[in-house]
Length: 372
Image (cartoon, rainbow, N blue to C red):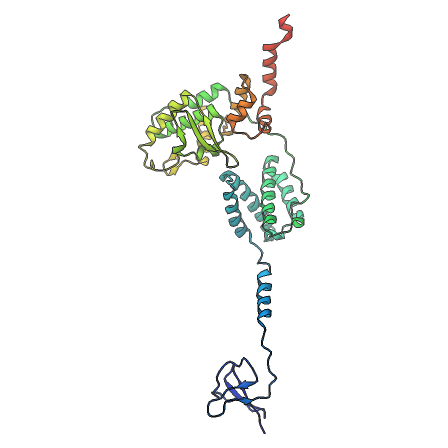
């Protein structure tokens, strides 16, 4: 006697004689209990010759779900990692300049190996890759650039370790030393040179008025270009002669300026009111809106070429400010406070320029031999 089997998935009826399935055979239900198929009509159920399928327990189902959650996600791409890392850096108040330098390091590492046919994911980078890339930089770029790229790579892979994307023992920066570089010598601008640049900006156009005020603030405070560029109009206090800035590392600090800088800033604010973008919250404006640190750098370089016939960059004003402060017997603790430094380490770095010149001048002024 043939035994009838009903498949709940195919909704067909088969017979134990091996006959082909009969399409359209009526069935009901999915068959949680796979041994019983329900047919229409008077009969309620028919036992079938199939071993009962065990019903999966809820405990096993929950265990499977937890195991799936614990599985590691797909490896990050460079683009995805940079997008997520940027959010982390911004939450830590990293400056745009810092983020730009960090990202340049990662992209140059990626591009270097892409040119060789290797598309490396962040977790595939090894110490050998990093050392090869740094060696390439040592041959093609300045030592200072190699150091900057090292710092960017080190920060990136430290973040990946913190995120659990790579184990600390697998970091490609482990036991990779920072490239050596001689201390850069930044040229000090003479007072006559700085005066020539400031006074070359005749207050006849908006650009001249703005550039004169910016240069005057550089001379008077030695402020960093990134902090000055991000200054807000609301942070300027002409009465108390100060400007609140965000310093390197995200700290807030007020810089103080003198009477002549106040005069130039007052004139700029008056001209700024007639600017098409006057409703901007930023203090410094270009014709397209915010006058960024890149625009200020270009302005300083262009003024330097036109007036002095040489390359000038904003950081030279910072070194010059430190030199003239110390040359006129300004106190170190006051300089640290004015410059917004957190310790005396920066003072040692900036004060190294023209140290011998200041020492000779001090000896001439204090020479014991001239006193007897």
